[in-house]
Picture 1 (cartoon, helix red, strand yellow):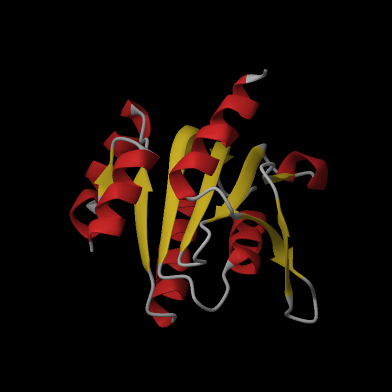
Picture 2: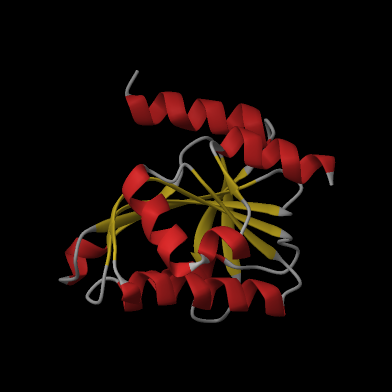
Length: 166
C-alpha cells in the first residue's frame, strides 16, 4: 500500500465513509462527483506551469471540501491553481480545508491566489482554513499577517474536529 493510499484511507475515515471524490465542474457549470476512495489529482506541470498538484475530496455531507496542495505556488502556477480551485467550489460547501504539508514554495502570487480563493468562499458564505503548514510556509503566512486572518491547524484531523464542533 502506497503512502497516498494510506493517506486516502485516513481521509475516508475522517471525512466520512461515504464521501465523494470531487471532479472539477464541467464547462456547463455542472459538477461531477463519483463515490470512492481515490482523489482527483491535477498536475499543472503538464500545462507548462511550475509544478504543483491539487487533490480534492468532499465530506459525505458536502459541507467540507478538502484541497490538498503540493509543490510550488508562484507566478507561473498561480493562474492555473486559481482556475482549478474555483472549479471545485460548489453550492453547499461551508468549509474549505487547504492542506499545505506538501507545499514547498509560496510566492506573493501564490498568496494572492489563496486570498482570491478566500474571497470566493466568503461570497458563498463559506470559510477557508489551513492545515499542515511547514516551517517555511508558516513563516510566509506570519510575515504576510495571514496567521491572524485564517484558522491554521496542525493537521487535517484537527481542522475537521474543530469544524464539526461548530
